Length: 171
Image 1 (cartoon, rainbow, N blue to C red):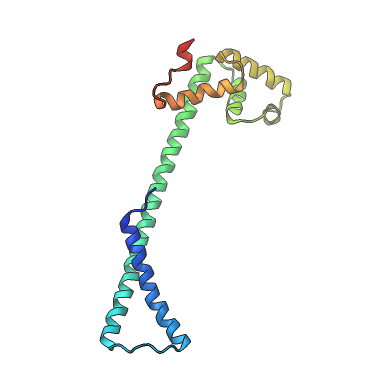
Image 2: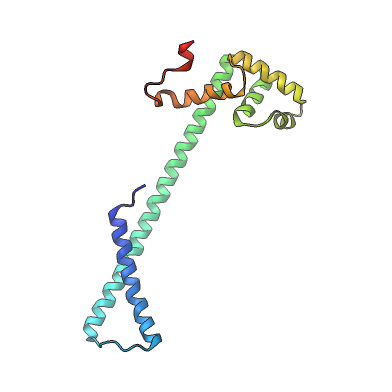
């Protein structure tokens, strides 16, 4: 993401204004002698620095609000994509005629859980999970977990890779 020039400008203005106030404090603390200036010029400079800081705070607030709105929008899109992926899984599982137990095993497999983890979560033996996995692979027309996952990834990216033919169409 590129930083808009206006944001950089307001950042530089805020730094300059803050340096004005900090330098005044440092000069006073260190007891340095500086050339005196008229009180009128001093007041104008302080007002300008204060206005710069207040303006920077205002634009900082707007930037935070914009970021929060953008974050909510992205979260909404992510939820929609996640829901669409679950719909895709459900449709595919239904098309393959998976049993409810096979659906659970297939979902856990797609999520990346091991056979042992799936067996523990489903309160079954590893042998049962392996048998169900083999039934899933047979019904899906694939030879293993990687190809099963590949089917869903292929559906997700769709036409995102121009010039690359669909592997299923080549068979």
